[in-house]
Image (tube, rainbow, N blue to C red; front, side, top):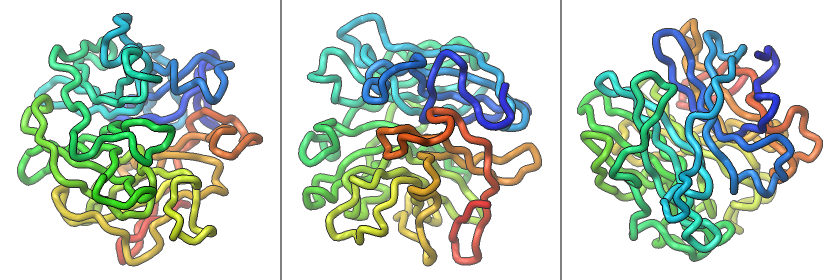
Length: 324
């Protein structure tokens, strides 16, 4: 356990998501063995688990999901970022998979595993339940030649009960270098999905990754992460921040757009990357992120590849967000 951040002693961790169940926070995170070269961690990643009652001290629960032993399987190379939620007494863990059967494992697909105890997870027989959609996926003008279809965030509409998935993707209707978007899909049962037009396609980034949604005062906030090298050429150099930005909408099926205030929540100077908003034990929204490493431009970052302590999130009158 740690009061200044969290990382198992034998592993490095990075992207993560959090579920709260009966007063216990469950942290699910990507991980690789300690000592893994930064450029290699995405090729051997699995999903780890830890628990906490205060979002500061975490107890390691070990590995809960690993790549399939079947070389031809959709998730046989590495597992990437996902999301967890509960429905009718069963927990659903959505995650990104990459396969050894694809050239360089570049195609990304989304599947789901289920559990009744948050420890033992069984992949769904219909996996991948949310494969790349033709209207989004493609290799042209993407980072590292990948087919981006990853990082699902699943949210239930409190009015209709419909589930919405928000996914890192590309919009081929945008010019090259500006195709980064957040795709959207909806489902009634978390298995059968209808893919919809993008939730956001600002024409500003090559990619927009790790979407995360939460609701406050009637607004939905869509957080996403970008690296400095992913901005379109028309974006001013001083605005090309590696970090977390956000968009706002009134409904899950609405158009997400920047707030009237600045849309940057976490910038390059933080030496941190991606993030989630979670209510703390007192009901206040806090922001969790992880300490970045050398491949994100921070070779001397303290405690790289570890979960950072929570920070208070503040809301402005015009829909803006800030960190204390």
